[in-house]
Amino acid sequence: MKITIPNNYSGRILSVPYSRALKQRIVDLWAMMQELDDNNFPALLYISAWKKDEKIIWYEYIGAELSLLFNCNCRDMPECFRNAIVERRVYSYGERDSARIREKILTREELRTDLGRLRREAQKSGAMEAIYKMALPNGEIRWFKDLARLEPHDQDGIFLSLGCLTDVSKEMEQKDLLQKIGYFDELTKLPKRKIMRRIMEICLGQFERKHILDFSFLMIDIDHFKKINDTWGHQAGDHILFELAQLMKANKRKEDEVGRYGGEEFYAVCIGSLKSGIDFARRLRRIIENHDFSYEGQQISLTISLGIAAVSELAEQRIKSLINLADQRLYQAKKQGRNQVVGGKQ
Image (cartoon, rainbow, N blue to C red; front, side, top):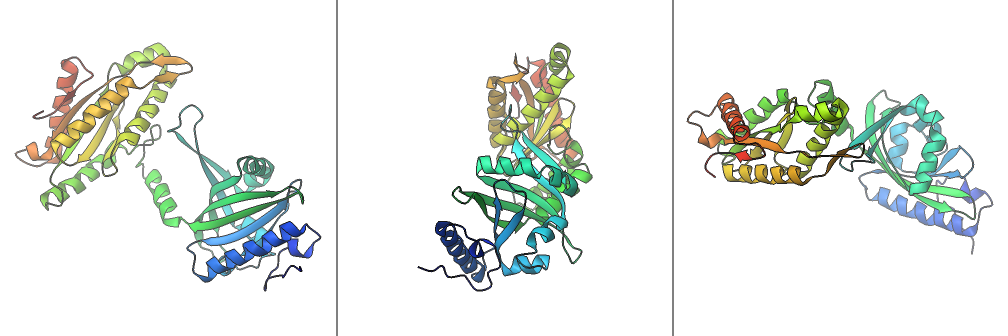
């Protein structure tokens, strides 16, 4: 049976003597992508391809919206896309710590020299995932998340990349803005102390308007942190701070916030009753006490002390008073022997 070439097809595979199986696969994928595009699929779809031993990439399919966005056709898409790249970002988990997310940024020039390695990594994993900052032909700067599944066709020595681009401009612009204004602590990647007051102001406003029934503030301090620095060095101390931060972040509720107050002190803002805040504090204390912290093969024991106060406890609902009460209770927890939680009525 003869392979029917789709209307408006401008790829390579169907016009070159590749296997019938590969050509039929292209026809089937082309029809599937076209149907999704015709039904306003909420992403920019594409099929790209390359030979295993060559650097050249080409496109077998791009949707109408993708073509319009880059002001080019299927044949010109590789060059248009390559020239539009400002930078490429990849996020991965650290080898030692699965909670640690690493960000790797490549400029357009670095990407060109690193293309072979990136393609080999993709072929090994069977997938590609990256975020691109793009300068579009109309002068607009946009961010796109690129997700693709790789499909090898060994008989023809071809890899197909079945992917989509989604616009994540708002998310990335907000992330970059928050980093520029110093929202995140550089070491722990948690919100800094200077944004803490703004978080609490929002919670206080919600409390006063009765949108929430209560909220608690936690002051958290690592016990004997100086001893860790003195024994294993400041790099070990930094590693512990980061790992602790990720543990707290992983164990908080979605509606709560944790951040770095300064030095070895952290904070948390918990929506809900004082009891729910105390429950969170106790759970956090147990998790930290039982966690296996390590640095370069050395096991490091760690505990924390916590002071907690709820806004409903105050005669006058003021942020400064709430912080002071939690701080007093933290001092009490440390005075009573550390590795404990001190709150209101427990």
